[in-house]
Image 1 (cartoon, rainbow over the protein chains, first blue to last red):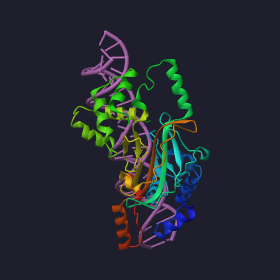
Image 2 (image 1 turned 180 degrees about the vertical axis):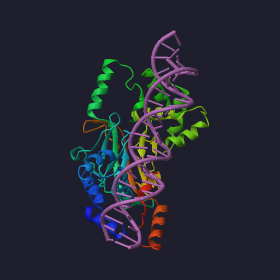
Image 3 (image 1 turned 30 degrees about the horizontal axis):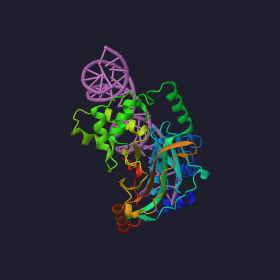
Image 4 (image 1 turned 90 degrees about the vertical axis):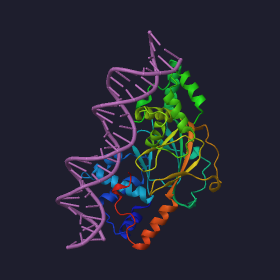
Length: 162
Length: 162
DNA sequence: TTCTTTGCAAATCGTTTGCAGCATG
DNA sequence: CATGCTGCAAACGATTTGCAAAGAA
Protein backbone atom coordinates (compact mmCIF):
# COMPACT_ATOMS: atom_id res chain seq x y z
CA UNK A 1 0.00 0.00 0.00
CA UNK A 2 1.33 3.44 -0.90
CA UNK A 3 2.02 6.07 1.73
CA UNK A 4 -0.68 8.49 2.77
CA UNK A 5 1.20 11.25 0.97
CA UNK A 6 1.35 9.30 -2.27
CA UNK A 7 -2.33 8.45 -2.05
CA UNK A 8 -3.25 12.08 -1.40
CA UNK A 9 -1.23 13.26 -4.35
CA UNK A 10 -2.75 10.61 -6.57
CA UNK A 11 -6.29 11.52 -5.54
CA UNK A 12 -5.71 15.23 -6.15
CA UNK A 13 -4.09 14.53 -9.51
CA UNK A 14 -7.29 12.83 -10.58
CA UNK A 15 -9.52 15.68 -9.44
CA UNK A 16 -10.56 13.91 -6.25
CA UNK A 17 -10.69 15.33 -2.77
CA UNK A 18 -8.56 14.42 0.20
CA UNK A 19 -11.07 14.22 3.00
CA UNK A 20 -10.45 13.47 6.63
CA UNK A 21 -12.32 10.20 6.27
CA UNK A 22 -10.04 9.01 3.51
CA UNK A 23 -6.89 10.01 5.35
CA UNK A 24 -7.94 8.39 8.60
CA UNK A 25 -9.00 5.17 6.91
CA UNK A 26 -5.71 5.07 5.01
CA UNK A 27 -3.76 5.57 8.21
CA UNK A 28 -5.75 2.96 10.09
CA UNK A 29 -5.15 0.37 7.42
CA UNK A 30 -1.57 1.03 6.43
CA UNK A 31 0.18 -0.68 9.31
CA UNK A 32 -2.50 -3.19 10.11
CA UNK A 33 -1.16 -6.74 10.00
CA UNK A 34 -4.35 -8.28 11.43
CA UNK A 35 -6.15 -8.80 8.10
CA UNK A 36 -9.20 -6.96 9.47
CA UNK A 37 -12.77 -7.20 8.26
CA UNK A 38 -14.69 -4.07 7.35
CA UNK A 39 -16.59 -4.37 10.60
CA UNK A 40 -13.41 -4.61 12.69
CA UNK A 41 -11.93 -1.57 10.98
CA UNK A 42 -15.18 0.29 11.47
CA UNK A 43 -15.18 -0.30 15.21
CA UNK A 44 -11.62 0.91 15.53
CA UNK A 45 -12.22 3.98 13.38
CA UNK A 46 -15.30 5.08 15.29
CA UNK A 47 -12.98 6.08 18.13
CA UNK A 48 -11.51 8.83 15.97
CA UNK A 49 -14.40 9.36 13.57
CA UNK A 50 -17.62 8.86 15.48
CA UNK A 51 -19.74 9.99 12.52
CA UNK A 52 -18.11 7.60 10.04
CA UNK A 53 -20.60 5.48 8.13
CA UNK A 54 -20.03 1.93 6.96
CA UNK A 55 -20.98 3.16 3.50
CA UNK A 56 -18.00 5.48 3.38
CA UNK A 57 -15.69 2.85 4.77
CA UNK A 58 -16.70 0.38 2.07
CA UNK A 59 -16.36 3.05 -0.59
CA UNK A 60 -12.84 3.92 0.46
CA UNK A 61 -11.84 0.29 0.87
CA UNK A 62 -13.13 -0.55 -2.61
CA UNK A 63 -11.14 2.35 -4.04
CA UNK A 64 -7.97 1.06 -2.46
CA UNK A 65 -8.66 -2.41 -3.79
CA UNK A 66 -9.22 -1.17 -7.32
CA UNK A 67 -6.07 0.91 -7.14
CA UNK A 68 -4.10 -2.18 -6.18
CA UNK A 69 -3.20 -0.77 -2.76
CA UNK A 70 -5.17 -3.26 -0.71
CA UNK A 71 -6.18 -6.83 -1.27
CA UNK A 72 -9.57 -8.20 -0.29
CA UNK A 73 -9.89 -11.89 0.42
CA UNK A 74 -12.05 -14.56 1.95
CA UNK A 75 -10.91 -16.77 4.82
CA UNK A 76 -14.08 -18.81 4.84
CA UNK A 77 -15.63 -17.10 7.85
CA UNK A 78 -18.23 -15.26 5.79
CA UNK A 79 -16.53 -11.90 6.06
CA UNK A 80 -14.32 -10.07 3.61
CA UNK A 81 -10.86 -9.36 4.99
CA UNK A 82 -8.53 -6.59 3.87
CA UNK A 83 -4.75 -6.54 3.77
CA UNK A 84 -2.52 -3.56 2.94
CA UNK A 85 0.59 -5.69 2.59
CA UNK A 86 1.28 -6.00 -1.13
CA UNK A 87 4.85 -7.12 -0.75
CA UNK A 88 4.22 -10.68 -1.81
CA UNK A 89 4.20 -12.32 1.58
CA UNK A 90 2.70 -15.70 2.46
CA UNK A 91 -0.27 -16.37 4.73
CA UNK A 92 -1.46 -19.29 6.80
CA UNK A 93 -5.22 -19.86 6.88
CA UNK A 94 -6.93 -22.38 9.14
CA UNK A 95 -9.66 -24.42 7.48
CA UNK A 96 -11.42 -24.97 10.77
CA UNK A 97 -11.34 -21.69 12.71
CA UNK A 98 -10.65 -19.44 9.70
CA UNK A 99 -7.85 -17.55 11.41
CA UNK A 100 -5.17 -15.92 9.27
CA UNK A 101 -1.59 -15.10 10.12
CA UNK A 102 1.38 -14.11 8.03
CA UNK A 103 3.97 -16.82 7.70
CA UNK A 104 6.72 -15.93 10.20
CA UNK A 105 9.93 -14.88 8.49
CA UNK A 106 12.02 -17.57 10.11
CA UNK A 107 9.62 -20.25 8.91
CA UNK A 108 9.84 -19.23 5.33
CA UNK A 109 13.28 -19.26 3.83
CA UNK A 110 12.22 -19.99 0.27
CA UNK A 111 11.16 -16.39 -0.37
CA UNK A 112 10.40 -16.38 -4.10
CA UNK A 113 11.45 -13.60 -6.42
CA UNK A 114 9.31 -10.44 -6.41
CA UNK A 115 6.34 -10.40 -8.76
CA UNK A 116 7.23 -9.77 -12.38
CA UNK A 117 5.71 -6.64 -13.87
CA UNK A 118 3.86 -8.56 -16.52
CA UNK A 119 2.53 -12.11 -16.96
CA UNK A 120 0.58 -13.31 -19.97
CA UNK A 121 -0.29 -9.76 -20.98
CA UNK A 122 -1.49 -8.83 -17.50
CA UNK A 123 0.14 -5.90 -15.74
CA UNK A 124 0.89 -7.08 -12.20
CA UNK A 125 0.43 -4.86 -9.16
CA UNK A 126 0.40 -7.33 -6.33
CA UNK A 127 1.21 -10.90 -5.41
CA UNK A 128 0.26 -13.25 -2.57
CA UNK A 129 0.64 -16.78 -1.50
CA UNK A 130 -1.59 -18.78 0.80
CA UNK A 131 -1.21 -22.00 2.75
CA UNK A 132 -4.40 -23.71 3.91
CA UNK A 133 -4.45 -26.22 6.72
CA UNK A 134 -5.12 -26.52 10.43
CA UNK A 135 -3.67 -24.25 13.07
CA UNK A 136 -2.05 -25.80 16.16
CA UNK A 137 -5.17 -25.31 18.31
CA UNK A 138 -7.47 -26.89 15.73
CA UNK A 139 -5.05 -29.75 15.16
CA UNK A 140 -5.17 -30.50 18.85
CA UNK A 141 -8.95 -30.23 18.96
CA UNK A 142 -9.32 -32.58 16.00
CA UNK A 143 -6.91 -35.06 17.54
CA UNK A 144 -8.90 -35.07 20.78
CA UNK A 145 -12.16 -35.60 18.95
CA UNK A 146 -10.66 -38.48 17.04
CA UNK A 147 -9.49 -40.07 20.27
CA UNK A 148 -12.75 -39.73 22.11
CA UNK A 149 -14.89 -41.45 19.53
CA UNK A 150 -13.18 -42.58 16.41
CA UNK A 151 -16.06 -41.62 14.16
CA UNK A 152 -17.15 -38.50 12.38
CA UNK A 153 -14.80 -35.61 12.84
CA UNK A 154 -16.89 -33.09 11.03
CA UNK A 155 -20.44 -33.41 12.16
CA UNK A 156 -22.72 -31.02 10.35
CA UNK A 157 -21.02 -28.81 7.83
CA UNK A 158 -24.08 -26.73 7.17
CA UNK A 159 -22.78 -24.05 9.47
CA UNK A 160 -19.16 -23.84 8.47
CA UNK A 161 -19.02 -20.58 6.64
CA UNK A 162 -20.26 -18.24 9.33
CA UNK B 1 -9.09 -32.56 -4.89
CA UNK B 2 -9.24 -36.28 -4.20
CA UNK B 3 -10.84 -38.68 -6.64
CA UNK B 4 -14.50 -39.52 -6.36
CA UNK B 5 -13.57 -42.98 -5.11
CA UNK B 6 -11.36 -41.60 -2.37
CA UNK B 7 -14.02 -39.15 -1.30
CA UNK B 8 -16.66 -41.90 -1.22
CA UNK B 9 -14.48 -44.12 0.88
CA UNK B 10 -13.67 -41.28 3.24
CA UNK B 11 -17.32 -40.39 3.71
CA UNK B 12 -18.32 -43.98 4.40
CA UNK B 13 -15.43 -44.40 6.84
CA UNK B 14 -16.86 -41.52 8.86
CA UNK B 15 -20.37 -42.94 8.91
CA UNK B 16 -21.58 -40.61 6.16
CA UNK B 17 -23.65 -41.54 3.13
CA UNK B 18 -22.60 -41.43 -0.48
CA UNK B 19 -25.59 -39.85 -2.16
CA UNK B 20 -26.11 -39.16 -5.83
CA UNK B 21 -26.02 -35.44 -5.11
CA UNK B 22 -22.60 -35.66 -3.53
CA UNK B 23 -21.18 -37.83 -6.29
CA UNK B 24 -22.51 -35.64 -9.09
CA UNK B 25 -21.28 -32.45 -7.44
CA UNK B 26 -17.87 -34.00 -6.90
CA UNK B 27 -17.70 -35.06 -10.52
CA UNK B 28 -18.83 -31.68 -11.81
CA UNK B 29 -16.18 -29.88 -9.80
CA UNK B 30 -13.21 -32.20 -10.15
CA UNK B 31 -12.11 -31.22 -13.62
CA UNK B 32 -13.44 -27.70 -13.62
CA UNK B 33 -10.71 -25.16 -14.36
CA UNK B 34 -13.11 -22.23 -14.67
CA UNK B 35 -13.12 -21.23 -10.99
CA UNK B 36 -16.92 -21.37 -10.94
CA UNK B 37 -19.27 -19.65 -8.53
CA UNK B 38 -21.91 -21.65 -6.67
CA UNK B 39 -24.53 -20.23 -9.01
CA UNK B 40 -22.61 -21.28 -12.13
CA UNK B 41 -22.15 -24.79 -10.80
CA UNK B 42 -25.80 -24.94 -9.88
CA UNK B 43 -26.92 -24.10 -13.39
CA UNK B 44 -24.69 -26.75 -14.86
CA UNK B 45 -25.77 -29.38 -12.36
CA UNK B 46 -29.47 -28.80 -12.89
CA UNK B 47 -29.09 -30.50 -16.26
CA UNK B 48 -28.34 -33.79 -14.52
CA UNK B 49 -30.02 -33.15 -11.18
CA UNK B 50 -33.13 -31.07 -11.80
CA UNK B 51 -34.26 -31.37 -8.17
CA UNK B 52 -30.94 -30.20 -6.72
CA UNK B 53 -31.30 -27.35 -4.26
CA UNK B 54 -28.82 -24.57 -3.75
CA UNK B 55 -28.86 -25.50 -0.09
CA UNK B 56 -27.43 -28.93 -0.82
CA UNK B 57 -24.88 -27.54 -3.21
CA UNK B 58 -23.60 -25.11 -0.60
CA UNK B 59 -23.54 -27.87 2.01
CA UNK B 60 -21.45 -30.16 -0.18
CA UNK B 61 -19.14 -27.35 -1.27
CA UNK B 62 -18.54 -26.35 2.32
CA UNK B 63 -17.70 -29.93 3.19
CA UNK B 64 -15.12 -30.08 0.44
CA UNK B 65 -13.62 -26.81 1.58
CA UNK B 66 -13.33 -27.98 5.17
CA UNK B 67 -11.78 -31.23 4.04
CA UNK B 68 -9.14 -29.30 2.12
CA UNK B 69 -10.32 -30.65 -1.23
CA UNK B 70 -11.55 -27.37 -2.66
CA UNK B 71 -10.56 -23.79 -2.11
CA UNK B 72 -13.06 -20.96 -1.88
CA UNK B 73 -11.91 -17.47 -2.80
CA UNK B 74 -13.05 -14.00 -3.65
CA UNK B 75 -12.20 -12.28 -6.93
CA UNK B 76 -13.88 -9.03 -5.96
CA UNK B 77 -17.01 -9.59 -8.03
CA UNK B 78 -19.19 -10.24 -5.00
CA UNK B 79 -19.42 -13.98 -5.54
CA UNK B 80 -17.51 -16.82 -3.92
CA UNK B 81 -15.53 -18.88 -6.40
CA UNK B 82 -14.47 -22.50 -5.97
CA UNK B 83 -11.39 -24.25 -7.26
CA UNK B 84 -10.61 -27.98 -7.03
CA UNK B 85 -7.00 -27.50 -8.04
CA UNK B 86 -4.93 -27.88 -4.87
CA UNK B 87 -1.64 -28.44 -6.64
CA UNK B 88 -0.21 -25.07 -5.77
CA UNK B 89 -0.71 -23.32 -9.07
CA UNK B 90 -0.72 -19.56 -9.63
CA UNK B 91 -3.66 -17.42 -10.71
CA UNK B 92 -4.07 -14.10 -12.45
CA UNK B 93 -6.91 -11.90 -11.18
CA UNK B 94 -8.00 -8.69 -12.88
CA UNK B 95 -8.68 -5.81 -10.50
CA UNK B 96 -11.07 -4.19 -12.97
CA UNK B 97 -13.23 -6.97 -14.49
CA UNK B 98 -12.57 -9.56 -11.76
CA UNK B 99 -11.76 -12.34 -14.20
CA UNK B 100 -9.51 -15.20 -13.07
CA UNK B 101 -7.29 -17.46 -15.10
CA UNK B 102 -4.57 -19.88 -14.17
CA UNK B 103 -1.11 -18.65 -15.07
CA UNK B 104 -0.22 -20.44 -18.32
CA UNK B 105 2.56 -22.99 -17.82
CA UNK B 106 4.85 -21.38 -20.37
CA UNK B 107 4.55 -18.04 -18.60
CA UNK B 108 5.61 -19.37 -15.27
CA UNK B 109 8.97 -21.03 -15.15
CA UNK B 110 9.75 -20.22 -11.53
CA UNK B 111 7.50 -23.00 -10.21
CA UNK B 112 8.24 -23.02 -6.50
CA UNK B 113 8.70 -26.19 -4.48
CA UNK B 114 5.52 -28.01 -3.41
CA UNK B 115 3.98 -26.97 -0.12
CA UNK B 116 5.75 -28.24 2.95
CA UNK B 117 3.65 -30.46 5.20
CA UNK B 118 4.00 -28.17 8.15
CA UNK B 119 4.68 -24.46 8.73
CA UNK B 120 4.74 -22.77 12.11
CA UNK B 121 2.82 -25.63 13.68
CA UNK B 122 0.10 -25.58 11.01
CA UNK B 123 -0.52 -28.77 9.05
CA UNK B 124 -0.67 -27.74 5.40
CA UNK B 125 -3.17 -29.24 2.97
CA UNK B 126 -3.13 -26.77 0.11
CA UNK B 127 -1.21 -23.87 -1.34
CA UNK B 128 -1.97 -21.10 -3.84
CA UNK B 129 -0.45 -18.05 -5.30
CA UNK B 130 -2.21 -15.06 -6.80
CA UNK B 131 -1.17 -12.19 -9.01
CA UNK B 132 -3.41 -9.13 -9.09
CA UNK B 133 -3.35 -6.60 -11.89
CA UNK B 134 -5.13 -5.70 -15.11
CA UNK B 135 -5.95 -8.13 -17.89
CA UNK B 136 -5.07 -7.19 -21.48
CA UNK B 137 -8.62 -6.02 -22.27
CA UNK B 138 -8.83 -3.81 -19.19
CA UNK B 139 -5.36 -2.42 -19.78
CA UNK B 140 -6.47 -1.36 -23.24
CA UNK B 141 -9.70 0.12 -21.91
CA UNK B 142 -7.86 2.09 -19.26
CA UNK B 143 -5.33 3.36 -21.79
CA UNK B 144 -8.13 4.56 -24.06
CA UNK B 145 -9.86 6.35 -21.20
CA UNK B 146 -6.64 8.06 -20.24
CA UNK B 147 -6.15 9.23 -23.81
CA UNK B 148 -9.66 10.58 -24.25
CA UNK B 149 -9.61 12.81 -21.22
CA UNK B 150 -6.55 12.73 -19.10
CA UNK B 151 -8.47 12.99 -15.84
CA UNK B 152 -10.15 10.59 -13.52
CA UNK B 153 -9.79 7.00 -14.54
CA UNK B 154 -11.96 5.55 -11.85
CA UNK B 155 -15.07 7.64 -11.53
CA UNK B 156 -17.36 6.29 -8.87
CA UNK B 157 -16.03 3.30 -7.00
CA UNK B 158 -19.19 2.77 -5.04
CA UNK B 159 -20.24 -0.01 -7.38
CA UNK B 160 -17.07 -1.99 -7.79
CA UNK B 161 -17.74 -5.12 -5.88
CA UNK B 162 -20.83 -6.37 -7.69
C1' DT C 1 -34.86 -49.70 10.86
C1' DT C 2 -31.80 -45.94 12.03
C1' DC C 3 -29.51 -41.92 11.18
C1' DT C 4 -27.76 -38.86 7.69
C1' DT C 5 -28.90 -35.94 3.90
C1' DT C 6 -32.01 -33.40 1.03
C1' DG C 7 -35.21 -29.71 -0.44
C1' DC C 8 -38.31 -26.15 0.43
C1' DA C 9 -39.40 -21.68 2.25
C1' DA C 10 -38.15 -18.21 5.16
C1' DA C 11 -34.68 -15.65 7.52
C1' DT C 12 -30.15 -13.55 7.87
C1' DC C 13 -26.83 -10.12 7.49
C1' DG C 14 -22.88 -8.17 5.08
C1' DT C 15 -22.72 -4.92 1.49
C1' DT C 16 -24.55 -1.67 -1.85
C1' DT C 17 -27.62 2.16 -3.65
C1' DG C 18 -30.52 6.72 -3.83
C1' DC C 19 -30.38 11.03 -2.52
C1' DA C 20 -29.78 15.44 0.10
C1' DG C 21 -26.47 18.07 2.60
C1' DC C 22 -21.58 19.09 3.27
C1' DA C 23 -16.74 20.09 2.51
C1' DT C 24 -12.75 20.34 -0.43
C1' DG C 25 -10.03 22.51 -4.11
C1' DC D 1 -19.01 28.01 -5.79
C1' DA D 2 -18.72 23.67 -8.38
C1' DT D 3 -18.07 19.09 -7.85
C1' DG D 4 -17.03 15.19 -5.44
C1' DC D 5 -17.78 12.96 -0.92
C1' DT D 6 -20.38 11.61 3.09
C1' DG D 7 -24.11 9.71 5.85
C1' DC D 8 -28.62 8.05 6.44
C1' DA D 9 -32.18 4.78 5.54
C1' DA D 10 -33.80 1.52 2.64
C1' DA D 11 -32.88 -2.23 -0.63
C1' DC D 12 -30.45 -6.11 -2.14
C1' DG D 13 -29.06 -10.68 -2.79
C1' DA D 14 -25.99 -14.43 -1.90
C1' DT D 15 -25.79 -17.81 1.61
C1' DT D 16 -27.62 -20.09 5.67
C1' DT D 17 -31.15 -22.25 8.81
C1' DG D 18 -35.50 -24.98 10.56
C1' DC D 19 -37.92 -28.72 9.74
C1' DA D 20 -40.28 -32.63 7.53
C1' DA D 21 -39.69 -36.03 3.96
C1' DA D 22 -36.52 -39.15 1.47
C1' DG D 23 -32.88 -42.48 1.07
C1' DA D 24 -28.33 -44.81 2.33
C1' DA D 25 -26.32 -48.36 5.33
